[in-house]
Image (cartoon, rainbow, N blue to C red):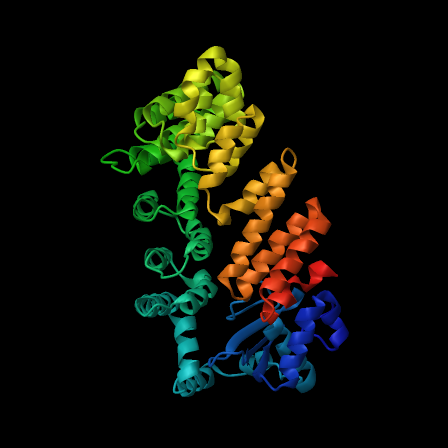
Length: 469
Protein backbone atom coordinates (compact mmCIF):
# COMPACT_ATOMS: atom_id res chain seq x y z
CA UNK A 1 0.00 0.00 0.00
CA UNK A 2 1.20 3.52 -0.78
CA UNK A 3 2.15 6.10 1.85
CA UNK A 4 -0.54 6.88 4.37
CA UNK A 5 -2.89 8.78 4.55
CA UNK A 6 -4.15 7.95 1.03
CA UNK A 7 -4.25 10.52 -1.74
CA UNK A 8 -6.78 8.76 -3.98
CA UNK A 9 -9.71 6.37 -3.64
CA UNK A 10 -7.68 3.75 -5.53
CA UNK A 11 -5.16 3.72 -2.67
CA UNK A 12 -7.57 1.89 -0.31
CA UNK A 13 -10.88 0.91 -1.97
CA UNK A 14 -9.53 -2.11 -3.94
CA UNK A 15 -8.09 -3.54 -0.69
CA UNK A 16 -11.44 -3.69 1.10
CA UNK A 17 -14.68 -5.69 0.67
CA UNK A 18 -16.94 -3.95 -1.84
CA UNK A 19 -19.89 -3.89 0.57
CA UNK A 20 -17.83 -2.12 3.28
CA UNK A 21 -16.60 0.46 0.73
CA UNK A 22 -20.12 1.04 -0.57
CA UNK A 23 -21.61 1.58 2.88
CA UNK A 24 -18.69 3.73 4.03
CA UNK A 25 -19.04 5.97 0.98
CA UNK A 26 -22.77 6.28 1.67
CA UNK A 27 -22.03 7.34 5.25
CA UNK A 28 -19.61 9.98 4.03
CA UNK A 29 -22.06 11.34 1.44
CA UNK A 30 -24.77 11.50 4.11
CA UNK A 31 -22.54 13.83 6.12
CA UNK A 32 -22.00 11.43 9.01
CA UNK A 33 -18.30 12.28 9.46
CA UNK A 34 -18.42 14.92 12.18
CA UNK A 35 -14.70 15.65 12.29
CA UNK A 36 -11.43 14.37 10.89
CA UNK A 37 -7.83 15.26 11.73
CA UNK A 38 -4.39 13.90 11.07
CA UNK A 39 -1.46 13.20 13.34
CA UNK A 40 1.53 12.08 11.29
CA UNK A 41 0.58 8.90 9.44
CA UNK A 42 -2.66 8.39 11.36
CA UNK A 43 -6.17 9.70 10.80
CA UNK A 44 -8.56 10.33 13.67
CA UNK A 45 -12.19 11.31 13.65
CA UNK A 46 -15.78 10.82 14.74
CA UNK A 47 -18.48 9.22 12.59
CA UNK A 48 -22.16 9.26 13.47
CA UNK A 49 -23.67 5.78 13.42
CA UNK A 50 -27.26 4.69 14.04
CA UNK A 51 -27.10 5.49 17.77
CA UNK A 52 -26.95 8.82 19.59
CA UNK A 53 -23.19 8.64 20.32
CA UNK A 54 -20.71 9.12 17.49
CA UNK A 55 -18.10 6.39 17.01
CA UNK A 56 -14.43 7.29 17.47
CA UNK A 57 -12.24 6.00 14.64
CA UNK A 58 -8.49 5.73 14.18
CA UNK A 59 -6.86 4.50 10.94
CA UNK A 60 -3.16 4.13 10.21
CA UNK A 61 -0.76 2.58 7.68
CA UNK A 62 -1.85 -0.78 6.36
CA UNK A 63 -5.47 0.16 7.12
CA UNK A 64 -4.86 -0.94 10.71
CA UNK A 65 -6.73 0.85 13.46
CA UNK A 66 -9.77 0.70 15.67
CA UNK A 67 -13.35 1.91 15.95
CA UNK A 68 -15.67 2.00 18.95
CA UNK A 69 -18.51 0.47 16.91
CA UNK A 70 -19.57 -3.17 17.57
CA UNK A 71 -18.51 -4.44 14.13
CA UNK A 72 -16.17 -7.43 14.67
CA UNK A 73 -13.79 -6.63 11.78
CA UNK A 74 -11.69 -3.63 10.86
CA UNK A 75 -11.76 -1.56 8.70
CA UNK A 76 -15.48 -1.02 9.13
CA UNK A 77 -17.77 1.34 7.22
CA UNK A 78 -17.01 4.14 9.70
CA UNK A 79 -13.29 3.86 8.94
CA UNK A 80 -14.03 3.98 5.20
CA UNK A 81 -16.21 7.08 5.71
CA UNK A 82 -13.29 8.72 7.52
CA UNK A 83 -10.94 7.91 4.62
CA UNK A 84 -13.35 9.50 2.13
CA UNK A 85 -13.66 12.55 4.39
CA UNK A 86 -9.87 12.91 4.39
CA UNK A 87 -9.76 12.75 0.58
CA UNK A 88 -12.37 15.50 0.42
CA UNK A 89 -11.01 17.78 3.13
CA UNK A 90 -7.29 16.92 3.19
CA UNK A 91 -7.01 17.18 6.98
CA UNK A 92 -4.07 19.23 8.14
CA UNK A 93 -1.27 17.30 9.84
CA UNK A 94 -1.14 18.34 13.51
CA UNK A 95 2.22 16.66 14.18
CA UNK A 96 4.50 19.48 12.90
CA UNK A 97 2.31 22.13 14.56
CA UNK A 98 2.56 20.36 17.93
CA UNK A 99 6.28 19.78 17.51
CA UNK A 100 6.79 23.51 16.95
CA UNK A 101 5.20 24.44 20.29
CA UNK A 102 7.45 25.51 23.13
CA UNK A 103 6.94 23.53 26.39
CA UNK A 104 5.07 26.39 28.07
CA UNK A 105 2.86 26.88 25.00
CA UNK A 106 2.07 23.14 24.91
CA UNK A 107 1.17 23.14 28.61
CA UNK A 108 -1.05 26.22 28.21
CA UNK A 109 -2.77 24.59 25.20
CA UNK A 110 -3.54 21.42 27.16
CA UNK A 111 -4.93 23.44 30.04
CA UNK A 112 -7.27 25.30 27.68
CA UNK A 113 -8.37 22.07 25.97
CA UNK A 114 -9.08 20.46 29.34
CA UNK A 115 -12.10 22.76 29.70
CA UNK A 116 -13.81 20.92 26.83
CA UNK A 117 -15.62 17.85 28.27
CA UNK A 118 -14.79 15.46 25.41
CA UNK A 119 -11.16 16.54 25.26
CA UNK A 120 -10.86 16.35 29.04
CA UNK A 121 -12.01 12.73 28.90
CA UNK A 122 -9.41 11.89 26.26
CA UNK A 123 -6.70 13.69 28.23
CA UNK A 124 -7.62 11.72 31.34
CA UNK A 125 -7.24 8.50 29.37
CA UNK A 126 -3.87 9.59 27.99
CA UNK A 127 -2.37 11.09 31.17
CA UNK A 128 -3.80 8.65 33.73
CA UNK A 129 -4.85 5.58 31.73
CA UNK A 130 -5.12 3.21 34.68
CA UNK A 131 -7.32 5.55 36.72
CA UNK A 132 -9.51 6.22 33.65
CA UNK A 133 -9.81 2.47 33.07
CA UNK A 134 -10.95 1.85 36.66
CA UNK A 135 -13.57 4.58 36.23
CA UNK A 136 -14.72 2.85 33.05
CA UNK A 137 -15.10 -0.45 34.93
CA UNK A 138 -17.21 1.32 37.56
CA UNK A 139 -19.51 2.74 34.87
CA UNK A 140 -19.75 -0.69 33.23
CA UNK A 141 -20.86 -2.27 36.52
CA UNK A 142 -23.58 0.36 36.85
CA UNK A 143 -24.71 -0.35 33.29
CA UNK A 144 -24.92 -4.06 34.13
CA UNK A 145 -27.39 -3.31 36.93
CA UNK A 146 -29.64 -1.64 34.36
CA UNK A 147 -29.48 -4.61 32.00
CA UNK A 148 -26.94 -3.13 29.56
CA UNK A 149 -23.20 -2.55 29.62
CA UNK A 150 -22.11 -4.26 26.40
CA UNK A 151 -21.13 -0.98 24.76
CA UNK A 152 -19.08 -0.05 27.85
CA UNK A 153 -17.37 -3.46 27.74
CA UNK A 154 -16.43 -2.96 24.09
CA UNK A 155 -15.00 0.47 24.91
CA UNK A 156 -12.84 -0.95 27.69
CA UNK A 157 -11.49 -3.64 25.36
CA UNK A 158 -10.15 -0.89 23.10
CA UNK A 159 -8.25 0.58 26.06
CA UNK A 160 -6.81 -2.65 27.48
CA UNK A 161 -3.29 -1.87 26.28
CA UNK A 162 -3.10 1.05 28.70
CA UNK A 163 -4.39 -0.93 31.68
CA UNK A 164 -2.25 -2.57 34.37
CA UNK A 165 -2.72 -5.91 36.08
CA UNK A 166 -5.01 -4.64 38.84
CA UNK A 167 -7.23 -2.83 36.33
CA UNK A 168 -7.54 -5.90 34.11
CA UNK A 169 -8.37 -8.03 37.15
CA UNK A 170 -11.13 -5.58 38.08
CA UNK A 171 -12.43 -5.78 34.50
CA UNK A 172 -12.43 -9.60 34.55
CA UNK A 173 -14.26 -9.73 37.88
CA UNK A 174 -16.85 -7.24 36.68
CA UNK A 175 -17.48 -9.22 33.46
CA UNK A 176 -18.74 -12.16 35.52
CA UNK A 177 -21.75 -10.00 36.48
CA UNK A 178 -22.64 -9.16 32.86
CA UNK A 179 -26.30 -9.67 31.83
CA UNK A 180 -25.02 -10.94 28.45
CA UNK A 181 -22.60 -13.70 27.43
CA UNK A 182 -19.20 -12.44 28.65
CA UNK A 183 -17.12 -15.16 26.95
CA UNK A 184 -15.83 -13.08 23.95
CA UNK A 185 -14.82 -10.23 26.29
CA UNK A 186 -13.17 -12.63 28.74
CA UNK A 187 -11.02 -14.10 25.97
CA UNK A 188 -9.73 -10.68 24.87
CA UNK A 189 -9.12 -9.48 28.44
CA UNK A 190 -7.32 -12.71 29.35
CA UNK A 191 -4.98 -12.26 26.41
CA UNK A 192 -3.90 -8.92 27.89
CA UNK A 193 -3.78 -10.36 31.42
CA UNK A 194 -1.33 -13.08 30.39
CA UNK A 195 1.16 -10.35 29.41
CA UNK A 196 0.98 -8.67 32.85
CA UNK A 197 2.41 -11.33 35.17
CA UNK A 198 -0.91 -13.06 35.92
CA UNK A 199 -1.79 -14.61 39.27
CA UNK A 200 -2.87 -18.26 39.13
CA UNK A 201 -4.80 -17.92 42.39
CA UNK A 202 -6.83 -15.03 41.00
CA UNK A 203 -7.76 -16.92 37.82
CA UNK A 204 -8.65 -20.03 39.83
CA UNK A 205 -10.97 -18.01 42.05
CA UNK A 206 -12.72 -16.57 39.00
CA UNK A 207 -13.13 -20.01 37.43
CA UNK A 208 -14.54 -21.59 40.58
CA UNK A 209 -17.22 -18.87 40.71
CA UNK A 210 -17.82 -18.78 36.97
CA UNK A 211 -16.76 -22.01 35.18
CA UNK A 212 -16.14 -20.41 31.79
CA UNK A 213 -14.18 -22.18 29.05
CA UNK A 214 -12.05 -19.07 28.50
CA UNK A 215 -11.06 -18.91 32.18
CA UNK A 216 -10.39 -22.64 32.29
CA UNK A 217 -8.13 -22.54 29.25
CA UNK A 218 -6.26 -19.46 30.51
CA UNK A 219 -5.60 -21.11 33.88
CA UNK A 220 -4.44 -24.38 32.31
CA UNK A 221 -2.08 -22.61 29.93
CA UNK A 222 -0.50 -20.76 32.82
CA UNK A 223 -0.47 -23.89 34.95
CA UNK A 224 1.52 -25.79 32.32
CA UNK A 225 4.34 -23.30 32.83
CA UNK A 226 4.05 -23.28 36.64
CA UNK A 227 2.85 -26.83 37.43
CA UNK A 228 3.87 -27.13 41.07
CA UNK A 229 2.26 -23.82 42.02
CA UNK A 230 -0.87 -24.70 40.05
CA UNK A 231 -1.27 -28.18 41.56
CA UNK A 232 -0.73 -26.81 45.08
CA UNK A 233 -3.71 -24.49 44.58
CA UNK A 234 -6.09 -27.34 43.79
CA UNK A 235 -6.47 -28.77 47.29
CA UNK A 236 -9.26 -27.97 49.74
CA UNK A 237 -13.03 -28.34 49.54
CA UNK A 238 -14.38 -29.24 46.13
CA UNK A 239 -18.14 -29.89 46.37
CA UNK A 240 -18.73 -29.36 42.64
CA UNK A 241 -15.63 -31.22 41.43
CA UNK A 242 -14.15 -28.26 39.56
CA UNK A 243 -10.77 -28.42 41.28
CA UNK A 244 -10.56 -32.14 40.58
CA UNK A 245 -11.42 -31.60 36.93
CA UNK A 246 -8.75 -28.92 36.57
CA UNK A 247 -6.19 -31.14 38.30
CA UNK A 248 -6.89 -34.06 35.96
CA UNK A 249 -6.77 -31.84 32.87
CA UNK A 250 -3.50 -30.21 33.93
CA UNK A 251 -1.89 -33.56 34.75
CA UNK A 252 -2.90 -34.89 31.33
CA UNK A 253 -1.32 -31.88 29.64
CA UNK A 254 1.83 -32.46 31.66
CA UNK A 255 1.97 -36.08 30.45
CA UNK A 256 1.19 -37.52 33.89
CA UNK A 257 -1.62 -39.81 32.68
CA UNK A 258 -1.87 -42.20 35.63
CA UNK A 259 -2.11 -39.37 38.15
CA UNK A 260 -4.75 -37.66 36.02
CA UNK A 261 -6.87 -40.81 35.69
CA UNK A 262 -6.53 -41.48 39.42
CA UNK A 263 -7.93 -38.00 40.10
CA UNK A 264 -10.89 -38.67 37.80
CA UNK A 265 -11.59 -42.10 39.31
CA UNK A 266 -11.41 -40.73 42.82
CA UNK A 267 -14.31 -38.37 42.15
CA UNK A 268 -16.71 -40.74 40.40
CA UNK A 269 -20.12 -39.78 41.73
CA UNK A 270 -22.50 -38.87 38.92
CA UNK A 271 -23.16 -39.58 35.26
CA UNK A 272 -21.08 -36.60 34.10
CA UNK A 273 -18.06 -37.92 36.03
CA UNK A 274 -18.30 -41.26 34.24
CA UNK A 275 -18.77 -39.60 30.86
CA UNK A 276 -15.63 -37.53 31.42
CA UNK A 277 -13.54 -40.50 32.58
CA UNK A 278 -14.67 -42.80 29.76
CA UNK A 279 -14.00 -40.07 27.21
CA UNK A 280 -10.47 -39.61 28.55
CA UNK A 281 -9.79 -43.35 28.53
CA UNK A 282 -10.94 -43.62 24.92
CA UNK A 283 -8.76 -40.66 23.92
CA UNK A 284 -5.79 -42.49 25.46
CA UNK A 285 -6.64 -45.70 23.58
CA UNK A 286 -7.60 -47.63 26.72
CA UNK A 287 -10.80 -49.07 25.29
CA UNK A 288 -11.16 -52.13 27.55
CA UNK A 289 -10.88 -49.95 30.66
CA UNK A 290 -13.34 -47.46 29.20
CA UNK A 291 -15.85 -50.26 28.63
CA UNK A 292 -15.52 -51.41 32.25
CA UNK A 293 -16.39 -47.96 33.55
CA UNK A 294 -19.20 -47.57 31.01
CA UNK A 295 -20.67 -50.84 32.30
CA UNK A 296 -20.31 -49.64 35.88
CA UNK A 297 -22.17 -46.42 34.98
CA UNK A 298 -24.90 -48.46 33.28
CA UNK A 299 -25.39 -50.55 36.42
CA UNK A 300 -25.48 -47.50 38.69
CA UNK A 301 -27.51 -45.05 36.55
CA UNK A 302 -29.37 -47.25 34.08
CA UNK A 303 -32.39 -44.96 33.77
CA UNK A 304 -30.54 -41.67 33.25
CA UNK A 305 -30.85 -40.50 29.60
CA UNK A 306 -27.39 -38.90 29.81
CA UNK A 307 -26.01 -42.45 29.69
CA UNK A 308 -26.88 -42.91 26.02
CA UNK A 309 -23.34 -42.16 24.72
CA UNK A 310 -21.94 -44.83 27.06
CA UNK A 311 -24.63 -47.32 26.06
CA UNK A 312 -23.88 -46.64 22.38
CA UNK A 313 -20.24 -47.40 23.18
CA UNK A 314 -21.12 -50.68 24.90
CA UNK A 315 -23.39 -51.77 22.06
CA UNK A 316 -20.77 -50.92 19.43
CA UNK A 317 -17.92 -52.76 21.17
CA UNK A 318 -19.71 -55.63 22.93
CA UNK A 319 -23.38 -55.79 22.08
CA UNK A 320 -24.38 -57.97 25.02
CA UNK A 321 -28.11 -58.43 25.66
CA UNK A 322 -27.92 -56.26 28.80
CA UNK A 323 -26.37 -53.45 26.70
CA UNK A 324 -29.18 -53.57 24.13
CA UNK A 325 -31.77 -53.90 26.89
CA UNK A 326 -30.48 -50.83 28.74
CA UNK A 327 -30.36 -48.71 25.58
CA UNK A 328 -33.82 -49.83 24.47
CA UNK A 329 -35.20 -48.81 27.86
CA UNK A 330 -33.85 -45.27 27.39
CA UNK A 331 -34.35 -44.93 23.64
CA UNK A 332 -36.68 -47.57 22.19
CA UNK A 333 -35.57 -48.48 18.67
CA UNK A 334 -35.88 -51.24 16.15
CA UNK A 335 -32.16 -52.11 16.13
CA UNK A 336 -32.02 -53.06 19.81
CA UNK A 337 -35.36 -54.87 19.61
CA UNK A 338 -34.18 -57.08 16.75
CA UNK A 339 -30.78 -57.61 18.41
CA UNK A 340 -32.44 -58.83 21.61
CA UNK A 341 -34.77 -61.08 19.65
CA UNK A 342 -31.81 -62.67 17.85
CA UNK A 343 -29.56 -63.02 20.91
CA UNK A 344 -32.14 -64.22 23.42
CA UNK A 345 -33.70 -66.84 21.16
CA UNK A 346 -36.64 -68.63 22.74
CA UNK A 347 -36.28 -66.65 25.95
CA UNK A 348 -37.24 -63.48 24.04
CA UNK A 349 -40.94 -64.44 23.97
CA UNK A 350 -41.12 -64.16 27.75
CA UNK A 351 -39.33 -60.79 27.80
CA UNK A 352 -41.20 -59.23 24.87
CA UNK A 353 -44.33 -57.99 26.76
CA UNK A 354 -42.28 -56.23 29.43
CA UNK A 355 -40.00 -54.78 26.74
CA UNK A 356 -42.86 -53.27 24.71
CA UNK A 357 -45.09 -52.18 27.59
CA UNK A 358 -43.38 -48.79 28.22
CA UNK A 359 -42.93 -47.96 24.50
CA UNK A 360 -44.99 -44.88 23.64
CA UNK A 361 -43.97 -44.33 20.01
CA UNK A 362 -46.82 -45.75 17.87
CA UNK A 363 -44.67 -45.76 14.72
CA UNK A 364 -42.05 -48.00 16.33
CA UNK A 365 -44.76 -50.32 17.60
CA UNK A 366 -46.34 -50.43 14.14
CA UNK A 367 -42.99 -51.32 12.54
CA UNK A 368 -42.44 -54.10 15.08
CA UNK A 369 -45.94 -55.54 14.55
CA UNK A 370 -45.44 -55.42 10.77
CA UNK A 371 -42.13 -57.26 10.97
CA UNK A 372 -43.67 -59.95 13.16
CA UNK A 373 -46.97 -59.94 11.23
CA UNK A 374 -48.83 -59.46 14.49
CA UNK A 375 -51.98 -58.19 12.79
CA UNK A 376 -54.16 -58.28 15.91
CA UNK A 377 -51.75 -56.09 17.86
CA UNK A 378 -51.50 -53.71 14.91
CA UNK A 379 -55.28 -53.49 14.64
CA UNK A 380 -55.57 -52.71 18.38
CA UNK A 381 -52.92 -50.03 18.00
CA UNK A 382 -54.74 -48.35 15.10
CA UNK A 383 -58.05 -48.40 16.91
CA UNK A 384 -56.81 -46.61 20.01
CA UNK A 385 -54.84 -43.81 18.33
CA UNK A 386 -56.30 -40.36 17.49
CA UNK A 387 -56.30 -39.04 13.88
CA UNK A 388 -53.37 -36.72 14.66
CA UNK A 389 -51.11 -39.79 14.83
CA UNK A 390 -52.33 -41.19 11.49
CA UNK A 391 -49.91 -39.47 9.07
CA UNK A 392 -46.77 -40.86 10.73
CA UNK A 393 -48.37 -44.29 11.03
CA UNK A 394 -49.41 -44.21 7.39
CA UNK A 395 -45.80 -43.67 6.33
CA UNK A 396 -44.80 -46.78 8.27
CA UNK A 397 -47.57 -48.81 6.60
CA UNK A 398 -47.16 -47.59 3.01
CA UNK A 399 -45.01 -50.48 1.78
CA UNK A 400 -46.74 -53.45 3.43
CA UNK A 401 -50.32 -52.16 3.79
CA UNK A 402 -50.87 -49.43 1.16
CA UNK A 403 -54.67 -49.50 1.38
CA UNK A 404 -54.57 -49.05 5.14
CA UNK A 405 -52.09 -46.20 4.70
CA UNK A 406 -54.48 -44.51 2.24
CA UNK A 407 -57.30 -44.81 4.76
CA UNK A 408 -55.20 -43.23 7.49
CA UNK A 409 -54.11 -40.35 5.24
CA UNK A 410 -57.71 -39.72 4.17
CA UNK A 411 -59.13 -39.74 7.69
CA UNK A 412 -56.30 -37.57 9.00
CA UNK A 413 -56.93 -34.96 6.28
CA UNK A 414 -60.68 -34.98 6.93
CA UNK A 415 -60.06 -34.49 10.66
CA UNK A 416 -57.82 -31.45 9.98
CA UNK A 417 -60.46 -29.93 7.69
CA UNK A 418 -63.13 -30.44 10.35
CA UNK A 419 -61.05 -28.32 12.75
CA UNK A 420 -61.46 -25.31 10.43
CA UNK A 421 -59.09 -22.41 9.78
CA UNK A 422 -56.39 -21.87 7.17
CA UNK A 423 -53.54 -23.43 9.22
CA UNK A 424 -55.56 -26.66 9.55
CA UNK A 425 -56.40 -26.59 5.82
CA UNK A 426 -52.71 -26.17 5.03
CA UNK A 427 -51.88 -29.23 7.16
CA UNK A 428 -54.60 -31.20 5.40
CA UNK A 429 -53.09 -30.23 2.02
CA UNK A 430 -49.69 -31.57 3.09
CA UNK A 431 -51.25 -34.85 4.24
CA UNK A 432 -53.08 -35.22 0.93
CA UNK A 433 -49.87 -34.48 -0.94
CA UNK A 434 -48.25 -37.46 0.77
CA UNK A 435 -51.34 -39.54 0.02
CA UNK A 436 -50.99 -38.64 -3.68
CA UNK A 437 -47.62 -40.42 -3.81
CA UNK A 438 -49.47 -43.67 -3.17
CA UNK A 439 -52.58 -43.17 -5.30
CA UNK A 440 -53.10 -39.87 -7.19
CA UNK A 441 -56.61 -40.78 -8.40
CA UNK A 442 -57.85 -41.76 -4.92
CA UNK A 443 -56.41 -38.51 -3.60
CA UNK A 444 -58.29 -36.43 -6.20
CA UNK A 445 -61.53 -38.23 -5.29
CA UNK A 446 -60.93 -37.47 -1.61
CA UNK A 447 -60.31 -33.78 -2.37
CA UNK A 448 -63.50 -33.51 -4.41
CA UNK A 449 -65.49 -35.15 -1.59
CA UNK A 450 -64.01 -32.69 0.94
CA UNK A 451 -64.79 -29.66 -1.24
CA UNK A 452 -68.32 -30.87 -1.89
CA UNK A 453 -68.86 -31.31 1.86
CA UNK A 454 -67.63 -27.73 2.53
CA UNK A 455 -68.63 -25.66 -0.55
CA UNK A 456 -68.47 -22.26 1.22
CA UNK A 457 -64.93 -22.53 2.59
CA UNK A 458 -62.94 -20.47 0.10
CA UNK A 459 -59.69 -20.77 2.10
CA UNK A 460 -60.01 -24.56 1.95
CA UNK A 461 -60.42 -24.48 -1.83
CA UNK A 462 -57.39 -22.20 -2.17
CA UNK A 463 -55.18 -24.52 -0.11
CA UNK A 464 -56.23 -27.67 -1.99
CA UNK A 465 -56.31 -26.17 -5.50
CA UNK A 466 -52.70 -27.07 -6.40
CA UNK A 467 -53.43 -30.77 -5.79
CA UNK A 468 -56.18 -30.79 -8.41
CA UNK A 469 -54.03 -29.09 -11.09
